[in-house]
Length: 444
Image (cartoon, rainbow, N blue to C red; front, side, top):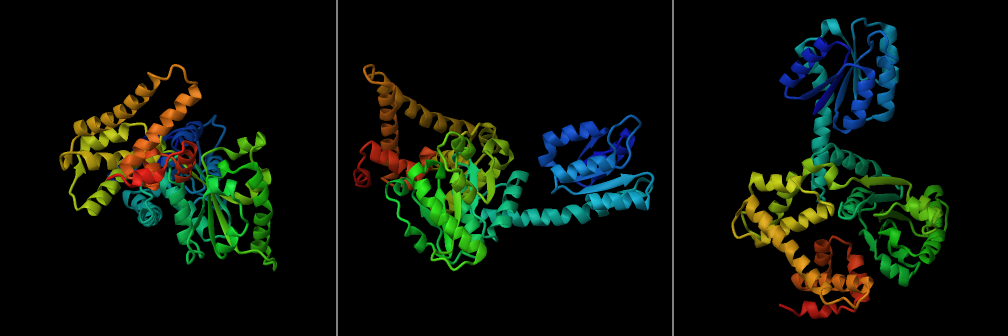
């Protein structure tokens, strides 16, 4: 929890900040409106409450009510308490209309008064946040950062609607987990979430698939991979399904909700005539964006502990990472996001010799894994001078996929997780490189 105090009196700010810190809550103080606006642009996601003075010194263009208006417009989820040395009913009424949750006078501020205000505002928020965190953990969505809490709030907000949801985010951020969570929370959860294989849909489109999802949810996982032809074929039935939902019109179409995921910016695809703008607006009635892991690295220790617990429970082990090992992982750049991090955690837990995993052993395992991949690639490139670049890349991809399938004994889902790509993408590459999946399932 963190409170921002905005007042032109340095002494007052310092006193209030000390009181708040003595209550075990972080506090930051700002003295001018411009500095406050700039601070919120940088750190707004970390602020849980604002204490805002009504009046500032001579020469300031903005007063407290102006700032309140800015904050309510740009940060509607952050409560604002107004403070003043000259309280009037008129100011209190204006502040309340603009969205202030409380109004206090400087001359009656005491530690007890501040504690009462913080408890009345922050404790309910804290309880709500804790419930949201526990709820998300049930679906494998781990973390305690403000980003994760906002993600949870959006899931809860949209789950109980019938709106089609577009989930966006980079590879490995957990889009399919979010989709499953949305479905399980909805009033359609008596039906299984139907996941559509986009590559198969591109080659074998059949409108009857909607019938099997009647009163349920269809997940179009990776709609940026839809061919233009299938996009055109999907538009008409989706429009009619949506019309039936919105108007209760007696159309001969099933009642289906659509959740779609994409790693690409569909608006750019639209501008390049690679995606249907009409279909985009049908599938994106609301959007959930999942930020990359590097924007909320404070969640990494919780993610690590989650997978350690999962591994220990599954294999009746008692392994754990030392604080130095956790710090090392937290400081790394995880471009493959949670999927890449989880892959390395599982690799380390399954190959570490000791139950207590030190940073040195962890680094050794990770480097060995990386070096094996580099060696495979180097061996290909050293004998491929006569091949084209595309042929070399295809060969690298084929060997990487085959090695991964050996490790997973032909389990495509596990291979996809290790490779950091979708299951559908693995199937596409298996077909492209003429890999016989049965060969790997026979290997012991």
